Length: 129
Image (cartoon, rainbow, N blue to C red):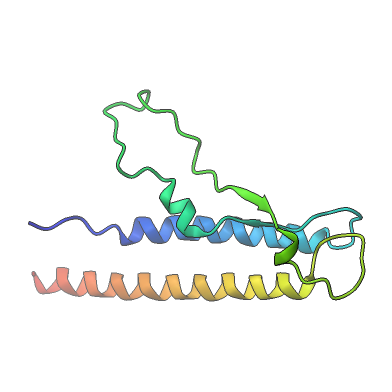
C-alpha cells in the first residue's frame, strides 16, 4: 500500500517559515540604530513543524479552531548576538546578514528540490507509470 507524498505541502510550509524569518531579519536590520531594540528571530523550523498537529483531523471546519499558521517569533538571547561595536541596540548587522544568506540558501535548495520532484512526477505521468 502506498501513502501520499506531501513534499509540495512541506515545501510550502517551509517557504512560509522562510518568509517570516526573512521579514524578522529585515525588521532587525531596520531597527539596528533604535535605542533599546532587541534582535528577534523565529523558532527553528523543526519546532514549527512539530506544532502543526498533522495527526488531528476534523469532519467540519467548525470542529477545531486554528490560529492561522502562526510562526512564533522570539527575542534573540544575549549569547546568540555578536556585539562588535557598542550601540544602544542588541542587533549585529554582520549576524543578520549571515542569517539572510542562510535563508536565501535554504530557499534555493527548496526550489531545486521541488523542481526536481515536479520533473520526476511529470515524467512518470507522461510514461503512464
